Image (cartoon, rainbow, N blue to C red):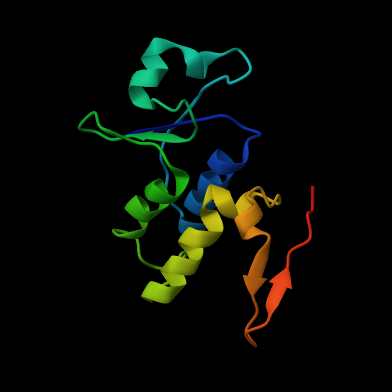
Length: 128
């Protein structure tokens, strides 16, 4: 088992922090994004979307999303709980880790308004 990563990008860093907090040791193999290593055919076999991190399991299969890798380690190492113990806590962890939650732009006209808790329509401000 090993993890392919690159220091300096957010998702591998999130995974490294998680593993350090849990005390889980897994060997890391650096992949140089700047040199184009993720675009090579050998790496695309590991992750067709060419992202990092990638966890290579002992049976030769790969997990290629940071949250999926975290959940993979959370099952056999539940203490201390890092992504919640209840389904709602885990759902919040998943939603905050999704790529859509990291976007600050409102891109579609249909999503420029939302309903507040009181039921009133609120117009969203464009942030970028």
